[in-house]
Image 1: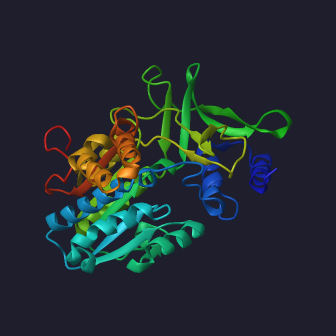
Image 2: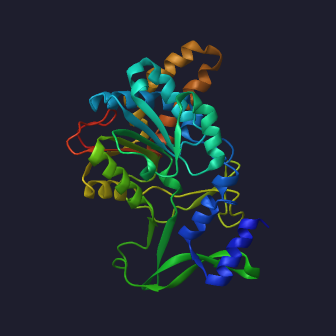
Image 3: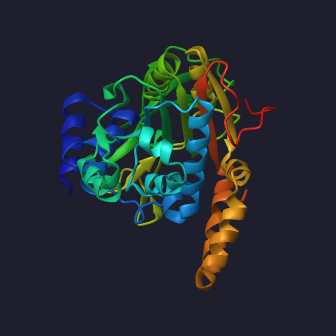
Length: 353
């Protein structure tokens, strides 16, 4: 039995069942035994778009240059990535940015990362650009910024509420047989909404806080914030908690701390929170259309011609990113900008802003 599982059992024994959000937070972010502290599993437990194809980061590098120019090419600005993983996406972005030396000269690279294991990996990948690490966006001094967050919001802990008969109850993690971890329901709650309007609700407790900090920075200092993640674009998620180990979906209760845990992003709440905070939101738009509008097909063909021995793999990898049957529809892209900003690259003015 893992030490984290023992700690979870002790906590439940002492305090009673815990919310799904509290369980998820301990599994992912416990400083000693959490998943991100002990076994950052990119490429093993899960694979992100930058690990699939270099084209993803290269296109975002071009996007960042375009938006920096649309901001008036400030002489100093922060390029901020939230949850940079192994640094692959940012390395690809900055390789593209070599075509814009003024952009690189003006940029201060800042990485928001809590995991010390991943910080070391990121420094190895991006050390030539003198990045600074920060535990949170609030630590970064004020100034214009381009903020990129790819698969960052999906690991925010979620609370889950379900209708049980004629009452709302919160899903919790407690004990089943032999003190094994099990899902159960808490006591009846005050009505969250009319029974029948929905039978389940999933709330990412930290989503609104993240968006409000980002929006405040954009309003005060100017810039752009690009969020790329998976989730529905026209509905609120309900019951989407999942766990992954070695590339396969597993029981989230079986090996706490040894598997990645994730939940769909509530893009509707992301957008409404941003607008209430006084910034404009573009999207959510499907990732496939966004990348194609930035030149994904042309870049894939260029790489394939330059690397004929691996041409099929190059084309297939980009197809995975853009196909509606794969990541192209499931993943969404949403951009925040100060009120009055023009539509960012990749976002059509009609129907997506």
